[in-house]
Image (cartoon, rainbow, N blue to C red; front, side, top):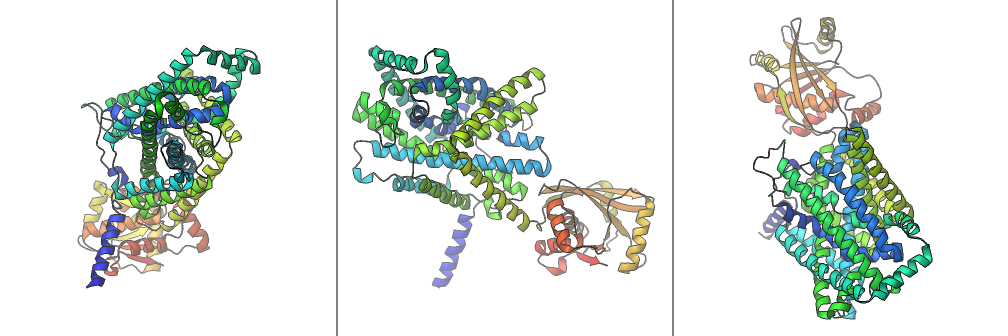
Length: 636
């Protein structure tokens, strides 16, 4: 009895853990919300960077932080915003810039490029989770009311990550209401802190005079300052995060009642409002926070271990508004930073199923949410330990992921624009992003190292998965035209016999020669009608496809024709379709292939064709477990 109960519990756990495994990602239905509410969902990631951006900016640019931040804001408003407005118009279902480049680069080149971009996207989202959790830890430890015994950054960060993963394991849904509350409170508190801090700057004009004098003493002229700021602003690239996430959540944005799946005009317009409003809010807060923190916080407090390390605005909140307000600010910051990790995790869980299963480059369980949560949770634990839960140390990896995705978006938009003048403008913006990305990689190479690890892992696991899944049926639907259906009906209740032939010039003589050869090698019964089958190789990099079968009459010889990325899998799917349509077990006839079987196996994996007969038989064996219902394969 107890054993039966254990088995039942195991089955229940398996069903719970792999929930959603049989649901195709494209079939998921999203609830939709007003654009400003969805902006708050993306804002828990984008706006939360205020928790650590001012400190990272000062460490990167020193006293030039406000000028470098101004350059960053300029790039946000005249560069990133126009780019992502175009991306939103081109990918209203949340495909993002990656899908735009996928269209430009077909076949294996496009797939390889997408895998690399997914590596950088994984870097962006994973480091968002670990960096945000680490900064939340910094705010916890930095609060004067927190016991000193909790001063263990790595352990505390791991606790936060575990709690985050536990939420997703329980079953996370887009918590729009919670996001709205967190963002509203957090932005309000930040406005209060920044306004009060800037008021202290205005009441103490000597602070500004000292800062201006120190800048002129070090750099000489104002133009020299801006020149250096142009070189330094790539180090502040964390302030650009949020645009790719804003596009990814477009399916959640409510449009007009007149929207159609093909033309969601209202959703696109509202998504652009989302991007524009978020960019304007963030630009104002970035400038205000940079000026306040640079002018009011001593430089040594920004260093690792200093009171303002990773929590510059929190330091000002405690100093100018009291410990009680500062603690409220800390709680708000901790909450939004922690929830920023939730936003990034949701991005990962939407990104992986969107591409890898479609390419056949993910294990079957990757379509379920909970196994992915466990996988990504383990990765975040590893990253946290490797970086010692240090916010500044992870900034380079985060910026690398963000900048590569934004650069790819700029490239995609430039390639999709047709007007020469606009292409020149977006081309210039692309060059700016390329410069920013390359300089960031040069200055902080740990980012490209982490991204390379993600890329290598994705490519290796994807290729292994593709090989392991190569003998799946892979054809999700078979559609036959009227002529092909008539050929099947003409069998008159007898088994349909299929003779596979390589596509040629379509002359009757070729079919007659093949029929004579098959009659001799297979000893076909006299008087048996035979359907010739020609399958042309399609894009072998595709994994799943719909098989369109066309019937043709070539001088009285009946031919079925189709195109497929994997010829044996298509033949197997057609044979099963014929069985189901006619109620009879079909027979297929092949000739032996001359050559090395290993070479043909590699040819099949790379180009979708090779030693067709044995692979077709294996696909049928895996798909139909009952040998008596399995279509017959004859080789001679």
